[in-house]
Figure 1 (tube, rainbow, N blue to C red):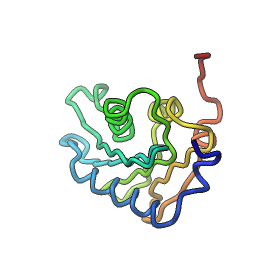
Figure 2 (figure 1 turned 90 degrees about the vertical axis):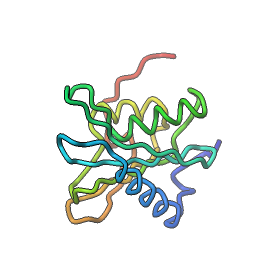
Figure 3 (figure 1 turned 45 degrees about the vertical axis):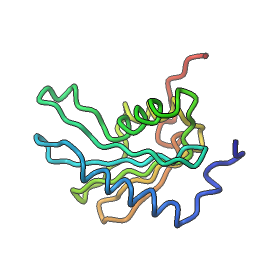
Amino acid sequence: MPSNPASELTPSLVAQLQHKAAAAAQKAYAPYSHFRVGAALLLEDGTIVTGCNVENASYRLTTCAEQTAITSAVALHGPAIRIRAIAVANLNNAASQPCGACRQTILEFSTPDTLIFFPKPDGTFDQATIAELLPAAFLLNK
């Protein structure tokens, strides 16, 4: 396990994550909002897993791209996965930080320094650690 996963992220690897997140957004099911989001997770073992948002007529049942990717990663690799980084992309040229529910789900499978890359309104990307995005995280003793 790397001591500081974020320190090993090269610009090329970040660009690859952003590209895979954008490709995943192409597959989103968003017939109601038309807000198509993709996410790409980089796991500690170097595996990249993607997901996209899947809407439902009952909006509360909609699943975000980040949660879809995490669910896929757990299904493929088991509950011991740890996320090194996440890239989020959308096809609507809008700012798109993970929502509160996604932040809590990301935290469950991350370390405080897990980096999240997300689009800004001007089309560039910003980044923050999960600890910065969720400073008052809900934690239970495991």
